[in-house]
Image 1: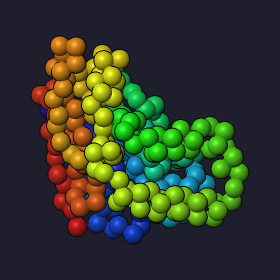
Image 2: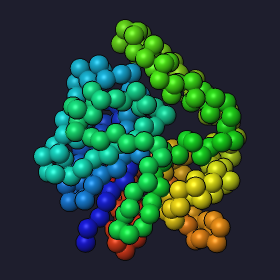
Image 3: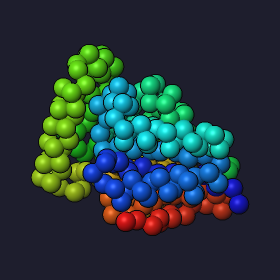
Image 4: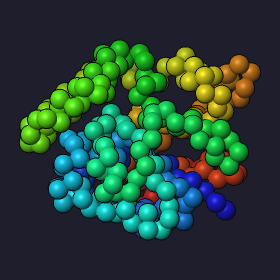
Length: 243
């Protein structure tokens, strides 16, 4: 049966060999059978700019994704909060198609909304303010004028600060806001939403203007590999060998 695969929040880095091995195995054994692969943000633990493709590990990930292009499997990627500096250089090296957040697709006759998920966490106002700054094109252009080594330092510092704040914040603040979910489903006209970011894999049901909708939250890859298999029969979370 035809299917489309969805993954997010892999946070790949050379320091996490189990996740890396699971990802490369997934690209070899599962993804080539899919109609398409969608990566819904945070493929990498962090990304300092496309000139970091000279790093051997980053180049290995790009080459592995490029292999799917040879298998005629389209790979679509939208940005997460860790890798929003992935740009056209990475797209050329990996063969992925960069897509907007949010994006609407028609999956086997079901209108489906795709997001990373951070835009739905509207209760975390501090993060939303930070997001607006770092997603500003002018800010990004200015950042890219800095030497790569300096950008790595800045990104690493921002990551550590984010980790400290995450431990200090209430879990409810970092989860999606129900009104934000209803709004994007209403505005898009979709009956299905797939996203990551919160690291809380689950299926949720919503009723929006009398329409029954479902929301699938993708898993992170910290302790297990995971993808969502979407077919004409519906959605099925699939766990992958890990470690």
